Length: 102
Image (cartoon, rainbow, N blue to C red; front, side, top):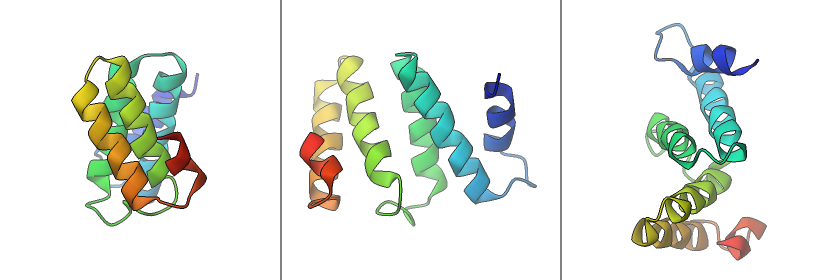
């Protein structure tokens, strides 16, 4: 199973390349999302966002992370948080296909 390897790559170990760690965090979020483990998916996506220090909030993959964070919040019953996440997608990623899904 890939999860233990991804978790190690996503770890806070000083030798991990930050770009590799972000890919692993996103993949772990996607795995949890596919399993409908909304809380775990949300944790991984939030870690991904925190790891960017705001530098990649508009970069590749960011729109999907924000959209999935909104979906996780909605499925966890956090309607206000979901609305905020969807608003971020609509504002920051206007004109992209993902914004139409928010």
